[in-house]
Amino acid sequence: MAKNKITLNVLADITKRINGGNFSNSKEKALIVFTGSNIEINKKVQELKRLKKNNIQVSLAFSFMAKRILDTYSFIDAFEPYEVYGEEDIFDLENILKNYCYVIGPNITINTLSKVSLGMIDSFVPNIIWTYLYMGKKVYLDFTSVKNYFGEPPKNGEIRDIIENHINALKKMGVIEIEEGNYIEKIVNKSKSPIFNKDASESTIFNKVITERDVMNYSSNSKSIVLPKGTIITPLAKERIKELGIKIELERSGGR
Image (cartoon, rainbow, N blue to C red; front, side):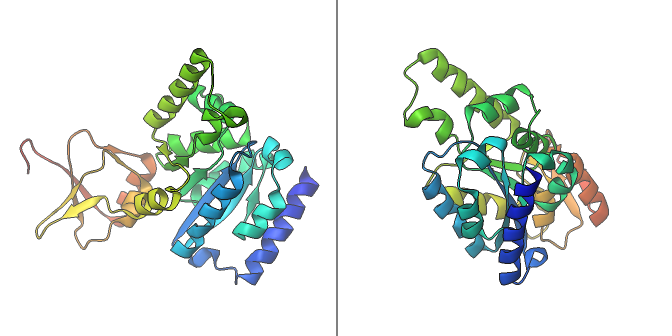
């Protein structure tokens, strides 16, 4: 496995050199995680390649089964990633969390879905997804592979309900569902959308959960943020707010 990891990163390094190694200059950095499903995978890869045109640099992460089912070398050629991760990088989650704004999972399997839903984070990709959700960072997942095991929806009602319950659990945790055809619209618009509605005198946050990325996207000369009651600020967002010297105010009943 270590030898395979070295080979994959050598290929990634070559593509990085060809592209000028501009990872640090890219405004946004995304980690695309692949699990062991090949349902419509080529179409999904072609759609995700458009991230580059939106100045979003990507790295790739492969689960144990993904490396055995998918053509990882063709993916590296298609995405020209900065870095390639595998199961052995489960101990490097802290650095991964720091380096990437959000995670994208185009081919999530029932194995990964159920593990995250139940908090069983004993393998690489479920651990990444859980960590990002735990820290209030964005996770975009396509559930098509789960809903179409062997290429078709479940005939068993109980199994269908189990799948839907797991999907709903992840959505409640903060997962944003994406589907083929709306990847770029969902990811680019969501990740770049401002969290503030500004008028001439003040800034008001309309998001219910404020993440570090939201704070980084805040572009205003105002150093005071008005939060409606019930707004949740993630730990990383709190740290960033403190670093930027932004003052937090609570919105009064009926407005300010």
